[in-house]
Image 1 (tube, one colour):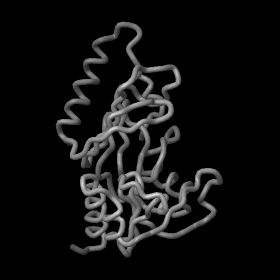
Image 2 (cartoon, one colour):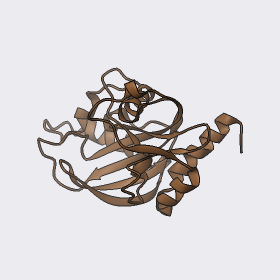
Image 3 (spheres, rainbow, N blue to C red):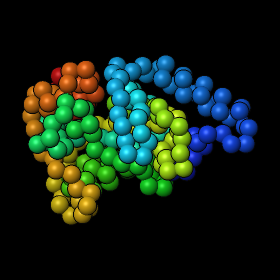
Length: 211
């Protein structure tokens, strides 16, 4: 279960507690060493500014103090992929990542279930964690920053779509989305970013007893 206040400790050290910072950084370096990145790019967000983003495959949650939004790749029993903003394709893996930040007391799996329901109307069941997105701020911290600093991580789960329930969707949060054949989703994402999608498919196939 995530403590939604833990990330606050990743703000710049203000009281000279260097020992805490060193311990956290060693733990984080060990985590990145265990799950190396397979893709790197840069993104600019309105509040955070410019950031480096890396994609990794992983089955273990990151240290709680750097965990941010929980993301999910949604597949159904036909092995179709739920694709966001289908009319505005950019080649990014973000088109198949649905999620948001946890509410206090939620487990990552509970966050994934709630967020997918609120944003798409689909009831899902989590299968397992398959990877993460790692963001590193490239600009100085500001009071407006609402994410762990300088690093934050978004764990990625694969979830199975069970049933469409429109009442789950929250007005204002709903995102245009449609299921598409896996091959079509694969072609809509640039090759360098596809390993997360392949990992999601493999997990669904294992669940269905297929190869």
